[in-house]
Length: 627
Ligand SMILES: *[C@@H]1O[C@H](CO)[C@@H](O)[C@H](O)[C@H]1NC(C)=O
Ligand SMILES: *[C@@H]1O[C@H](CO)[C@@H](O)[C@H](O)[C@H]1NC(C)=O
Image (tube, rainbow, N blue to C red):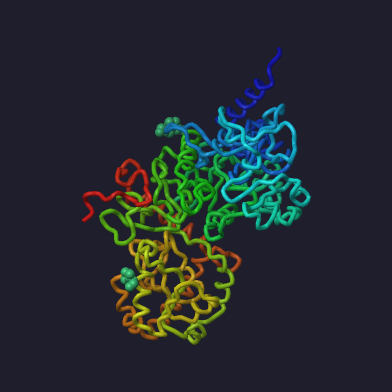
């Protein structure tokens, strides 16, 4: 009997799905027999593909038109000019239908991006190699929409300040590992902007393996996707087993977390544009967390044994520092809700994901609100209780719920050195090095009180008035920042447009933090004894700051400093230098789990406030209850 090829594929897929339902033993995952050619068999019936590939066996190279040639990485970043077919596919790849309409993972406005089309070539071969001068049969269009007009290719090449150049204009054509680009003012001339993982003038040198856990030595790293040798799968090839449903129960003693296996189409640390190599490191705590989590004993491969569920949403890649990625999160939640039984059991309340942007989870909406957020910004200002900090977020709790959300420490790129230097010193040595009572250096922004809830601004004015060398307040940067912090008794920890990193800087350099952050929950505040190592003040206290700090006795100061040294490891992700941020994040998650089991709080997603939704840059519109 004749069958079309896809009928066989469907039968195989059905067999794999049946195997998933009928699984009675722990064992390797079962998928389409060809899954491992390009992908990893992760969870039964589910072949996890490299970015851009789809299908039961990842057989469809869906974003092929977004590669410059059959080799090289596929990108959907908007900066470099690509083929019209690429933009069309990017839209179809990122936009999905959900119960609440189409969601595009924040990648939306492509249709007016100029692009090029090579006549006579089938869609799959409409690669994104920019037309060479004089190339025949290629036309540039103002967008990929049907009535798009033809434009000059030199015009189509320009996007804001960037110009896409033909590959031949760059050294060795960037070795097929990057786009050839220039700036509009041609300052650098044509230069290669290499694919992630590659460096050099012509993208000829391979950077260190950029995959998590370097694929655990069990697979090949492709961009940031590990192609694992069976039976391994998951991020970093860190899993090998699938469990039958209801295999066990969560232990009342050992705390366990199960991480979802999301396809790269649902969640991936996307390359944002040609030459993109990675996010600003201060936002990458979620990567540090992932790196430790993958082979941590807190992880379980058995979802029925899990207390909490980790959604590896790579939110930052969709939100950047200024956004929130509501569309992305809504799409991911819609997917896990329909594909797995766990979200619905608690309405997502035993699930967690990261929201590392400046304003953390402030502007989150919909069902995502009910999950546990790992965030850096603990604003708890509400319309009924706020100062200079606008009441962003949910009317009842603001941006972070103190009983539910984890305010994790962000990354300080110098943390390893600072921590190691400080850890080597005794309290006596640290005390002997103190040269002044108080120190701060950084931005102030007098015209923007919200920037720091007026704390920096008020203290700037006061220190100018005092003119007291013992209270050093520098507007801007100082070259010997680390030494300045370490040689001061107290250091100001104020926030700055969303979360700040002054608290962790003080802790890591052995300076007692003076925290002035009205309505902001601090990192791991639920599991760290802040009263033992810091001083907490309001803006109102600032005029008396000198008296307050001078009244601290040497004996009291010594105890504070001892505790700074006892707890400062919590403020660093650099595990090799003794940083324990991962351990504290888990500890805090565990505490949140107890709060959940204690029924200390309920659901909030249905209690949205029309004054706060949707978010506007001004925050919530004033409601009648603001006095
Ligand atoms: C979870 O609930 C939604 C309704 O909100 C439903 O459509 C979905 O099928 C449920 N998921 C499962 C796995 O039963
Ligand atoms: C600080 O001083 C400036 C200039 O006098 C003034 O405009 C501003 O309101 C003051 N800020 C605070 C918070 O006191």
